[in-house]
Image (cartoon, rainbow, N blue to C red):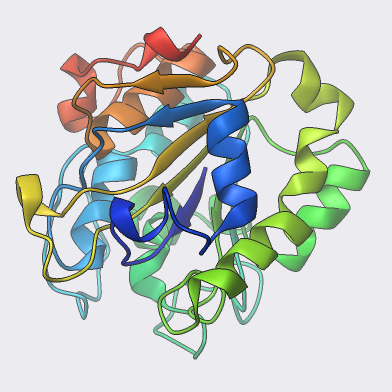
Length: 253
C-alpha cells in the first residue's frame, strides 16, 4: 500500500497531472466512488491500519493501544514492514524530522511496535525498499509512505507521479508480485475544502496480476474497505475495527 496526500479525485483523474498513476488506473482497477473518512490526515492513516480514525490530533504522541494491522499480522505469522521515506533511522518512533512526518506513518504509534524492539526494526527508511525488492525479500505486507515532498503534500502532483514511476513501477515486474501481488495506491484525504463523506472524494487504484483489466468500480468505498482488502488478501480473519465487517473490494478480482 502506498499513500499519497491531500488531493481530490477531480484533480487527478481526467487531468494531465499524474500520467503514470492515470495509466495504472486505466490498465488495472479504479475505485471511482472512494472517499476518505475525515480531515485532517492522521485519522485516515489510522483508518487504513486500525479500521478507526482514532484521533484528529496530528500532534498525538502515542502510543496507540487499539487493535491494528500489525497485531493481526503478528498473530497470523505474517511478515511486515513500514517503508517511510526520510525516516531518520531503523526503528525510529520519534517526532517529525522534515520531510518525514510521523503523522503519516501510523505503524510507528502502535504499542505492538513501540514496546517491542524486534517489531520496531520493521520500521525502515524507504531506501530499504529497493534492496528488499531486488533480493526478493519484500514482506507479505508493506506500507510505503513517501515524504512530504514526494507525496503531493508539499510538492506538486507531477513530482508525486514521477516518484511513483521511479520507485514503485519496478515492483510490477517483480516475479513474486506478478504471481499474486496486490498494490493499493490511495490518497489519504481530498482537498481540505472537499468534505464529501467526511474526507473527500479520492483516487484509489488497485494493481495486480489478478485485477480485472480496466475495471472501474462504482461501489462506495472508504479506507476501512482498503484495510479489509489487505486482510482478505493475506488471509487475516480478525481484521481490525470497521474493516471487520467491511466489503473487501473483491469485485476488482
